[in-house]
Length: 469
Image (cartoon, rainbow, N blue to C red; front, side, top):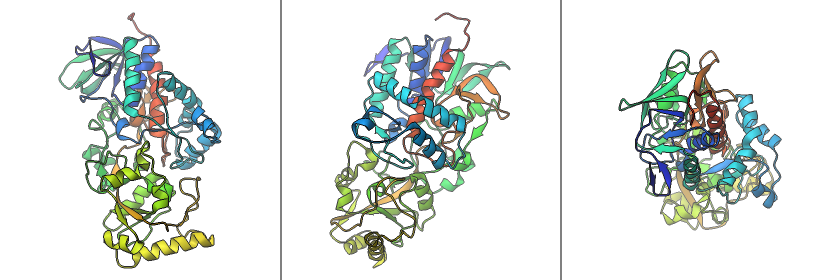
């Protein structure tokens, strides 16, 4: 065993047998590894690429937690009951209520567990689907390193460039994993934390043909490997009809686009299409905004805002890093709406009319024609776009995460098509379905990776073993 930079517990020799084998080094996998090690099992994590992170480090790094210390310090009123209501409302009650309850039951304990291992959270913000501000930002890479170092101190190990290819099964239970190079490792239990399939065009074409024109991001290893391995054993699937892209990504590849995009719409911007018209209630879930953007003429849209919104930029929260976008040359800027309209090539007079109508309705207290009553979810009130300078961010929809996947129970065991557990097989994180349902609340992807990853690792470690570790 050797230590990589940052003190990670890197193993170079594949053991013949381990207690808990975890696949994937995003948050779900790292949390599962540490939880299994804390339970006294010898746990090993295999990562197919040469680095940790997956989609976790491609995300905005926000976790949806309720009743936290940071919320109390900021005077934010929230409750677990409201969290549960929001999850079901955003998911249009297509969620698995047992998984929603499980998340709500364990989210605060997981938050405290993460903080106990050194994870720190910044200023809390409101975001999509939240009736109260509950997006807790953190440095995702540091979070994973903290968990892996803590796991290493308890005897757990991490291997890079170790792609799994098949689950081994004896007709009764999962017994091991075969790697792509033919090596095998025997196990007492496996935790699949391999993420989604945002980087696999074949699987996207199978499950989400509506994403044909979406940009693609996510962890390089997000090819659906774990999904396919589990499906080969009869695993069931949840939420595949609800695969959605993420709105706000820069419209073309750009060196300063880290995959998160920005959501100026949640701080006061409007979204307009190539005809200069608004096309959506901008307070809606950014997945739904992404769907609406994909069917606009030419696909590319613009988030249009003024100095009032720019003043709310926050470099600690990627989706609100508006000033950083200006520094990178990713924003159009002008002193008047007419000049901005010309700068981004919209039909003459179109953006001027749209902004004037938007401002007039707000000033007169009239209902918004597209139904917008808040800035984000149920938080904040729209304000006129009238303070120069004015900005426009060319925005597309990106496939960052697939938010659907394997059917699991409340022990995080993978279930087959008939609802029976596939013995000794667990899953957590983006590879699982059931929590989100038909919609997505900001922070619940990172949130469920921590909550369910911890539970999966702990429960996998409780499987009966013939060996002493």
